[in-house]
Length: 50
Image (cartoon, rainbow, N blue to C red; front, side, top):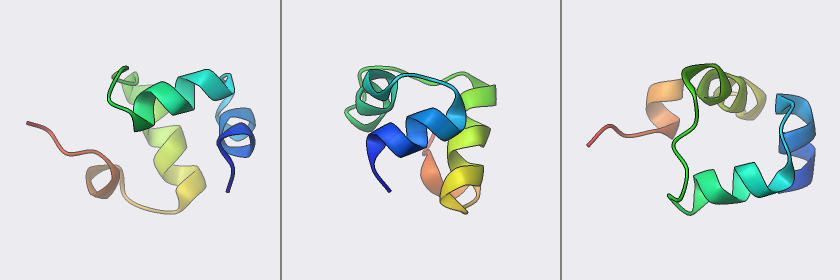
């Protein structure tokens, strides 16, 4: 899945997904769940709390 496709499904711009991938932006809880749902993984598998 492209960043653009994921962004569209989550209701954000592609740059937001890029920033999340590069640890430059911590997504809101709502966005984190949307990303996980669209990637078909659990949110705790996708994001690691440090």
